Image 1 (tube, one colour):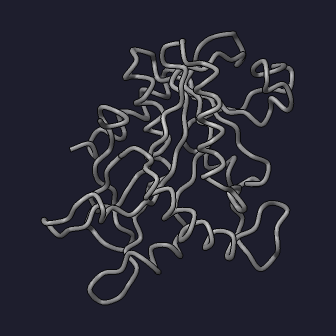
Image 2 (spheres, helix red, strand yellow):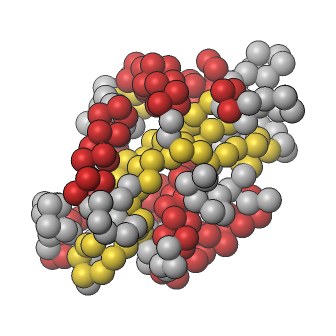
Length: 243
């Protein structure tokens, strides 16, 4: 069963006029292991968190352990087992091979996401919103290493991070919500991460907002909210890529 009902299905390839076929699938053990063993080491080797090594680019997900995150998600799900739509959705965006005889075993993960479709929070008013818990897109080194064309050149697929945000909006729409979304911009991502979320029409909460939730009580200014109107705009922008 697909994690969301109406995902984006293709993304542009950098430096060309072509599109790559992508798919949103459940986060299986196989995909989790590929990320842990092949993608995460490239992130850890080539990037640094903020404040960073001057010789490396900044990413918030340096040192992340998606196997551990999956256990966090299971613990969360156990706590909310009786409450509809408050359990996590764990999904991957995968690159789909052009070979018509491909199988699911040929899928390669280029994006990872754990979200909660219905999360009670104070942002700034108390309400249920979709929550982006963990999100990561593959670095360019992953394409250059594992996704090469016939000439041996890396096929860099663009727009994966925005597609992952779109998945959160779509997960909210799937449960008849309005697409409003909350996430935390980790300080380890520096200003680049905050600018990216701003470009995606998310707006940061103010310090005066107070605790975001019962357990998320500190630094409300690190959280970003995608309002209903901007959620509709995000979904509409992705519509041409859903076919």
